[in-house]
Length: 502
Image (cartoon, rainbow, N blue to C red; front, side, top):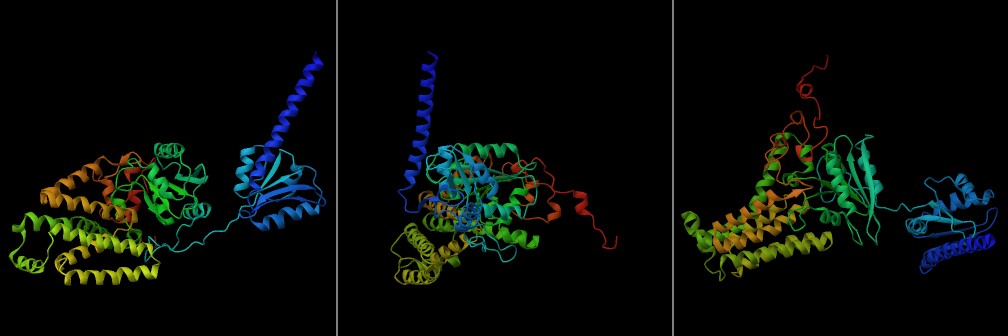
């Protein structure tokens, strides 16, 4: 009876072993359909089977490190290979999923026998990537000239070069059933609010999607309100801006394959803050920031006010200006709203054409096309020259926003204001403004008020909101991110004026 059970046990073990062997053979057979998958038997002092995908590995690691070691000395076990081959992060495993994923990510697999289920995985990832260059979207005249690239390891290096603290923590996860994209969450332990960190990590773990090709995917999926036209994460390509956000207690998200980082939580005012604001004198920086805010307001309401006043409120036009407007519109066959929509759509078409075409051609289309279309529209009597000036100034004012995402929002929200102006005049403009204001009051970024420090009012955060006060006045970190350590430096030390001889 006992021998019967022993035979049955041996049959089960042999069956399990055959299933394991067939599973790893089957896993490798799926790679064999690809022309870039290489599998060969190494002969010499050490006989083994080597498998890898040649398009994702570094050839020097294979030829100079692995094959040279295998030729010099006989190694009978995988453990002995691990000791002799000087490569970090080697893996000994029989986990089929890990083997498949490691080969796809640039590991070289070594087996002593072709049917062995226990393998050695040696990392040999190809490091081909774009070199660090100057920022293209957030260019600044003064200050650092480095921008993120598509390699997440390089981007983390650019951040760590600026923040040399052991408290700078990097949490990594993988998202995307197809792309298996690496996502890293950065924060400074002891400064960042742990609730914010947990919220970000929890939302990242809850993402179910097949592909993540850029950080903009993550921004849309993690937003508190995905139906809002306003971005709730700051998208930046500058490592210095990321370092500043981390020092304030914010969370940063980096995505492998994306040259942009996400910072959160954020506020509406932060989208009008440029990197130059922190490199210039505070008087000049504050003036430029106020100029941007005024330009954005003008860009949004200038053409709606034109439609509302010409349609419903003629009495608001000064007598000296009335004659000019009547003369410019004498031969215009369209009402003001249609006239404005024609020009606004023309501007948007020029923007899209300039953005999609190659750089040199796009610049030519933007300049020449704008001049030609504008002149032709006035001469043909399709629009007035007064409106052409207003629309051109509004388009120019919208370009002053330093963050590209908020510029797109400004382009979009202009049209609801135009509709309100056509229906109810200035009352319609006021109603649309009230609707957007109510939306902004309710909107949140990572659970924090998006309209802070205006609502709720935070006096301390106003020091770096509409204006930027001197650095010795900014003694505390912004309250929005709820930092664990709110104090930046001693207020009394900052106010001390010491002589150089003391």
